[in-house]
Structures are given as structure tokens and as C-alpha cells.
Amino acid sequence: MTGGAELHTLTGAYAAHALDGPERAEFERHLALCEACALEVREFAATLARLGAAEAETPPAELRARVMSGIGSVRQLAPPSAVVPVVPQPTGRRRRSRLVRHWPKLALAASVALAAALGGLAVDQSRRADEADARATQLQAQQAVFGSLLTAPDARTATATAGTGVGTVVWSQSRGQAGFLASGMPALPAGKTYELWFDDAGTMRPAGLLPASSGSLLLQGPLDGAVGVGVTVEPAGGSAHPSSTPVMLLPFS
Amino acid sequence: MVHLSGPQRRGPDLKELVAQVAFGDQDAFGRLYDAVAGPVFGLVRRVLRDPAQSEEVTQEVMLEVWRTAARYQPDRGEVMSWVLTMAHRRAVDRVRSAQATADREQRVAARSHMPAFDEVAEQVEGRLEREQVRRCLRMLTELQRQAVTLAYYRGYSYREVADMLSAPLGTVKTRMRDGLIRLRDCLGVES
Picture 1 (spheres, chains in turn yellow, brown):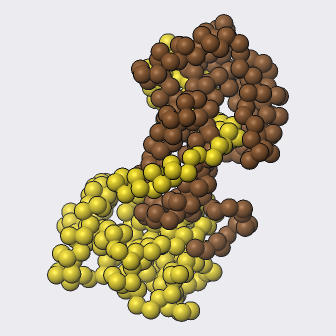
Picture 2: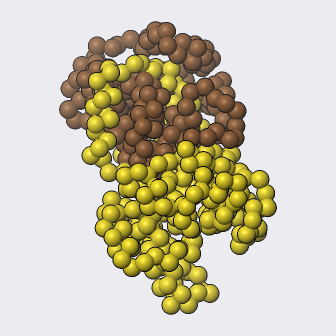
Picture 3: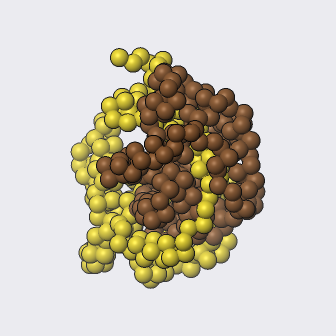
């Protein structure tokens, strides 16, 4: 049997992919519980990546063409499912059903996200079941629209960073809507939240709150003539007007 | 695309590119390919040797990058580290797969001498990075260096490394870790 201390010395072999079979499985179980080991493995992976990058060699040009044509048939995984509950715009029944047909690609993502959202709601004992049902329906509608946005033929993206976080806005003029994907946004102190805004050529219009540091949301309200999207830090619950300078600005260009 | 925070860096911001790729942006993926395919191909080739197999694995890795871009966590490490970890894993899996076994035994037999770091291929591109890696490898003890390079550049398991070096398993385990700690500090890798 290998004890905890001895397992810890396997961080190097694990990071170098030099562990196999049961030993690897055993170490991975240990890793899930050992924050110090996980950190060391990440550092070693970064160290070994430097050794790997030092070997860089120009691949044959035709490989690029093969890969670029290959991605057309590879379905992408959905973003991690931290669904952000934004009160959705009332969507006409006909319009929604038309959009829903456009998102088969994202259907699984939406259902996974919805399951996560429902799981979260289930443990929230302060909410009554009918409220949960209503939320679920709203989330489903929001995910449907977000999914359709991603597959819109004129969907475009812009990306900005804030500290460790990356924010990407996707918008479609034909759909008149925008969505936002956040990943690893810096944690905020209690009582603060990230708020999204449409930039109507200098006037900021509230577009929803981002309570989680990672996840996707459909921006509240139509694109109209907005020239971009901004993100600010606001008191919990959000503000009607930005009360701080944006941490991110993403022009629609 | 906007860059509002952080200093202007050389080359594209890989984290931004991955975020765009996660949205299915094929142009962004093309730029990401241009930034990482060289290191991926070079590393895979170093482990596998065989150019045709190395191309296959490089293609698999790049398609995996496309498929899983939305799962990349920027707070858990750099894009290059994420991609090269995937590349190394696949190269090692390939080298240990059944069809490679015969081939591999021949290679082991043919290489009775211990590989040295001067076998690191000479290339003009990335020479500075290569120099730094070599300099840091030289700061390791012989056993540390062999443990790390046999596992990483050759894809041997630590049991195989122990056999090749005629060293006890426990010693190889700790030397591999000690070697990586020295390399990490020498290369200035931050968590």
C-alpha cells in the first residue's frame, strides 16, 4: 500500500505521464483531495510544456489544411454549464419555436446547463417548487435563444480580458441579439456583481447580471443600434447606470 | 478584438483566441493553430520519431483543441501548457499502444547508451528558449536529468525508466520530482 506522503512524490511521474494503470488511478483519487499536489502537478505541467515548446518544429504545410477541413466535422463541447439566470425578454411564441429549430447543435449544452441550474434550485430551500418551474422555463427559453445565436450565419465575436478572466461577446445583427461567455472572471467581494451593458454610442443600457465567474448568458434587451458591450462591477442586484469604469469593453467591430 | 488590460504582448493572446474558438470561430482557430502547431508537432515527433505518426497525432491533438476549447480554464494555466499536456498524453498513449510495441522493443535494444541532452535537435527557430531549457537541464543531477528526459522526451513509464537506469522505483520517483522542482525554479515557472 502506498501512503499519502509517498503518493505525493508521484506528482512528477504523473505530470510526465509516466504513471500507468492502477497507480495512475490511485494517484488521481489522491489528487482530487490534495490541493498542494494539484498545484504542483500544474506547475510541473507548465515546466514540461517549456521542455516541449523548446522542441518546436514546423509541421508540413498540408497538415494545416487537413486540420482546418477536419474541424468542420467535429462537434464542439459546450461551455461549462454555469447558467446565469437573467430575466429573459418576453419572446413571442412563434418566434421562439422558429428559433428552437435552429439549435440542435446546442441542445445538449442547453439540457446539461438546465440540469445544473435545476440542481442548484433544488437545494435552494427558500424557493418554492412553482418558482423553480417558472425559472426552469425561463432558463430553457434563454438557452434556446443563446443556442440559436451561436449558430446564426452572421454571428460574430469579440474578446477581452480582465485579470485572469476572459469575456467573449457573440452577436448577430440578423437576430438582433447578443450573448456573453465569461471564463475565470476574478472573484468579487460579497455584495458586488458583474453587470453587462449595451453601449448605445456612449449611453450604457443595462443588459443583465453575471453572478458566476464562468458561464454564458443571453444579454437582456435587443441589440438595436448598440456599438458594443461593456462590463462593470456594481453593487449586488445591479445598477440602472454604471457606477464604475468598465473592466471590459467589447466593441461590435 | 480589443486588448484593454495587460501589456501589449508579442503574438496573439492565446487565451483570447481559445475563448473565440470556443464559440466556433474558425479564423481564431487558424491563428491558434499557427501559434501552437509547431510546438505540438515538435514535441510529438520527439516522442514518436516517426514523421507520419507524428502528423497523425498532431492532427488529433488540434482537433481535440477545437472540440474542447470551451473547457479550457484560463485560471488553471497557460494555453500552451494545456495544449502540450494533451499532445504529450496522446504521444505517450500512441507509443505505449500495442501496435507500437514491437517497434519500441527494437528501439530500446538499439539504444543501449543513455540519451544525452545534446540530442536535442538543433534548430534556429526558438533557439533562445532551447538554450534556456538546456541550461536548466544541465543544472540537474545525472539521475534527475535522465529520469525527466526519458519519461518526457521518450515517453517511458517510470517503471521502464527504473529498469533502464537500474535504479530502485522509489529513487526514480523522487528524482523525477526533484528534477522537475529544479527545472520549474530554473525556468521561472509560476503557478
